[in-house]
Length: 121
Image 1: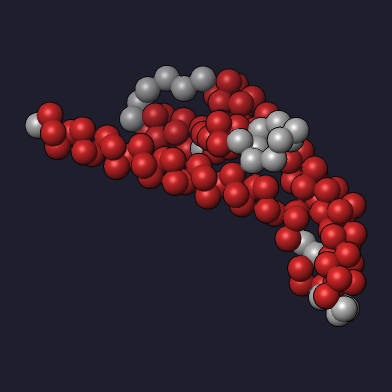
Image 2: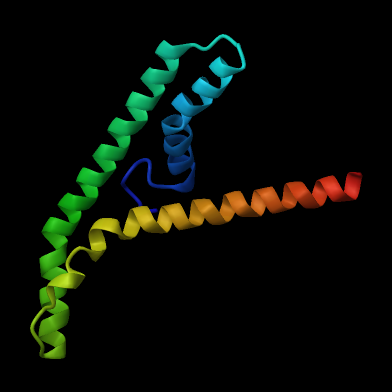
């Protein structure tokens, strides 16, 4: 959920996950004997995959540029050598934060759906 990087908010991540899972949905519909628009499904999945790869490349680039600078600055302030295992943190922080937030929102919505069903039934 980094400002300025399109597609990393929970709405964008929801779209990406939904579009990446479309072939599975299409396969289950096909097994039920329903019509499936495979060209549209593959186009949406391909677009989501390219957006995900673009996000990964952006995260890698940001981590490549800012990671050593931030690690070296923090290590210099603490008076220690920079540990290499912390350099990849920035590469995954935005995506991980967005995924955790999305998972929390989806779980909350499912919980609310169950509560609403229990109250109405």
